View (cartoon, rainbow, N blue to C red):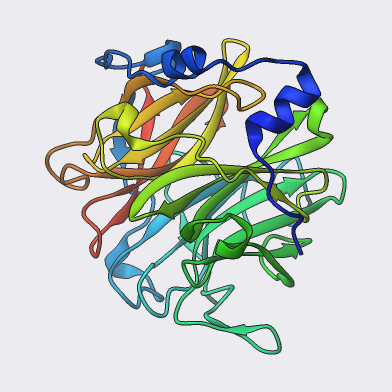
Length: 332
């Protein structure tokens, strides 16, 4: 069970001795002029292809694939099926957490023959309409894989694995009762990110629906199992001139921390939140989707990896209900 929620700025003020004035918060929250590409010095990404042939998949019950997460196995365990594991899922009923594997981030990837590796029913633990949005963390201290996934949309769960394929259920790590005033708590990603003042080693970013508006929230943990959550949104859509946000991912550059996420416009956006998650500096468009296939003016749920020095971005491409997994490669 997670601990009670605390206000982020109250905690950081006490821990860091920082004063947050109303004027300062207003300045940090003001939208910045959108940049054409590569805000904060990040590379631009160009569409490369689709790592999976959706039509040929053995398991694809709804004709949609969302929320990719790619992880290198070669330096973490022996006996892996390939250098990289790619996790993904359908969203609509019944969902199902799926795995594919390949030796290059440029593809191709091979479908695991026994998908889904996690289904909408787990005997003795839960029975839900669907499970989706897999995010996998390599837990260095435990030398194991931690899988975060949602099902229902109000609940984020955790399962652990030694081999990245066979998982043991741990339990619920986040639900809407832990963050007052939200009706969804899903699309969570977890990262190694220490905040000494909070005694934490991991950070979680996720989508929460607050009063009908989807925003980015966050939490922190010392062990990646027990979490505390800020009741205030980390990133709100108004700063980008949008109505809703989803699919957040942490990035670090320039000695600070950013969140990249999908906006209701179909584009991806970037906001600096700082290493202590105490700011909200909107930097504009991070990535613009293709107008044609496969994006069809929508790109979402980015996940990043580097293969032999080349940076790649996996993402959810296309309109909801018919989306596919796509991969783009850094061009600058």
